[in-house]
Image (cartoon, rainbow, N blue to C red):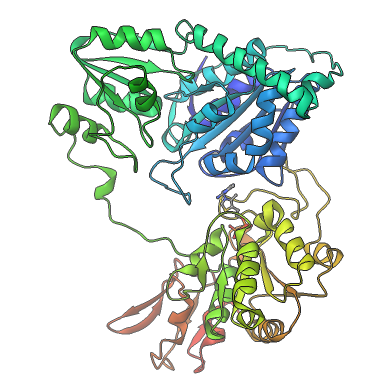
Length: 575
Ligand SMILES: Cc1ncc(C[n+]2csc(CCOP(=O)(O)OP(=O)(O)O)c2C)c(N)n1
């Protein structure tokens, strides 16, 4: 049976059909739906882990215990998981272990454009890259057998386009894969120097074997057409190449590390002019040139952003294919949603002349006007370490004007250790945990504080306030951010205090439930057009030539604007 499937659903299907029984992940666009899909299969234990490192450790544990295990993340998640990744390469697997990592060329929803292929190379792991949903399923499935055959974790690389487009997928039955016996083997699974030295030899041999087999493994295909132009490519770019240059010969790489050297040499010999077309870094190009093969790649193509059919047609054949490209659509800058509880926090920070070391989540939008309330955003969890570093560099006085702002999911992901550092190293800073009871940015996933699992089952909810107290923070306060007066008072007191404090601004994301959406507000004749409400940066409030209005189709009735209006000019029929 064939089914139209999102790339990410196809990855999940492939893992399911391969008999996976344990799947662990932390959400991250564009990888999130893989776990959301696999969680729907009853045969699979699935979890949102607190972060990618834990997710990979869970998957490694399941693999050592004999199960086929899956771990998914976005590209930057692999940085967080890099520690277990590099050593899991040494231990190898028992049950097949597959890590799906989704890159984001063009940074649709990421803080950098890193190329995860380098992880395969530096951790000495094989990497596969599908070009569409059909291959996403196939590769995810076959990766488990590959993992077991070569006793190695296998990375499957996706990207935004493969993960988020749909294609036809062959639906097959789930393989019945029994648990492998669990055998205690400290030489293989306890990586201390004596054992790891031996395992490093095994890793080198494994990669030699894989390299020797790469030429014949079914993932790489050569398509000879007109031989005046030959293209080496992989993944979604293969589709662009086929559309832009339908007559060109193509070597499509599916196993993208290690490279099939003989296949590449043969192909290079057969074509007159060889191009290497790969988004992001010259990963293939540098290796192919190191083989002594002449080719053109980054001399024509950028290391930045996504490629397209047009770009490839233009660069190689000097022709344009399509009239319009996504780039020609009007730009819409991101804004916090109407009714977002984070808005009240940044409004108040701005009012008090405070700014923040920031973190990653919906609240990062607080960096933009009119709030301009965030000075840094590096990676998940960094707000707390950044604030501590600033305090130590510039003195305690600096913390009176600076706070750290971090979301609830991000706090569990990697804020806990930063807070431990603040407690331990005598910080007097203020950490604001903007707790909207969900992982908002990636589409409402559960986390250890929400009280539900990825399957929607009831879980123990960790109490952030109790946790901060237990860690030794003496001043922990919870405030409803929509109580603007109280929020202002608390922030004034805590930033003035010469002691570490945690302020938890607690109010659910307005999009979590329809019940949070109330009748819209309107502006009455009392309006003096003072512009106070505009300081909220709410997309529902619009200034027109006729005066201020509220777009009823956008307003969620949160009423924050009515609270900041000094003229009682904003009202609702609903209250
Ligand atoms: C290492 C890493 N993993 C995952 C992501 C994707 N991501 C960005 S923000 C975020 C969490 C946001 O949740 P929260 O901190 O609760 O803030 P909210 O968006 O709800 O305001 C995630 C998972 C990332 N940027 N980096």
